Structure formats: structure tokens, C-alpha cells
Image (cartoon, rainbow, N blue to C red; front, side, top):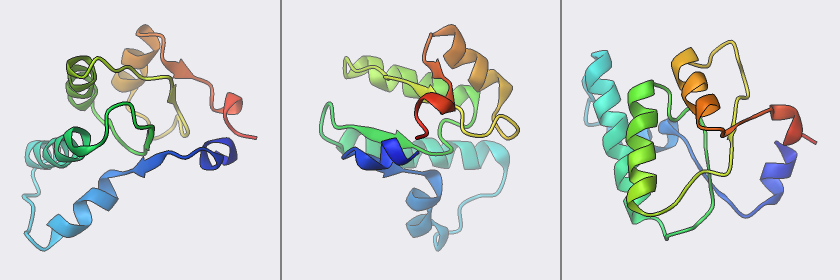
Length: 113
């Protein structure tokens, strides 16, 4: 992670994006939370400068989020450089397999110095 910190990348996480929305009492059902997360990330993604680097933490957390995020990247003619699995115990197997199939899954050891 030190290697990533040395780069000039925007770090984005659901927790950071959700803080301003908490006072609005987001619905607590899993589908509503997933939809709210996608809404917040959509707002961030389309507002950022094209080709600006970023590091996402805890997103995408579901296969639906991963597929929607892939569509956003395609719409802007962008692609991922890598998906780094930091904690295999908490990662969603479907998301891991999705990015492994696409060839983006990288070993954390390659990026941790």
C-alpha cells in the first residue's frame, strides 16, 4: 500500500461518500443500501476528470456493483489497471472471480512494498 500512497491518486471509499448522506437516513435494506452506494459512486465517477487516477476501497463490494462500474468505465472508454485483493477473507467471491476472469486481479504483494 505504501507504493499506492506515493502516487497522486484520489482515494475513494463508500464510508467517505456516505458520511454526508447518513443524516438523510439511508434505508437499511440490503437492496436499498446497494442502490444508495451505486448512486453515490455514480455521482463521484461522472464528476471526476477523465483519466484521473483513483484507488477504490470496499467498492465494488458486490457483483452488481462490479458490473455497473465496468459499464461506467466502458462508457468513458476507460479501463482498470488492476484490482488488488487486500483481504481475501472479506472479499466477495463473485467479485474476485469476475475480476480474475477479466484479467485485472493482481496479487497484493506486487503493490505492497
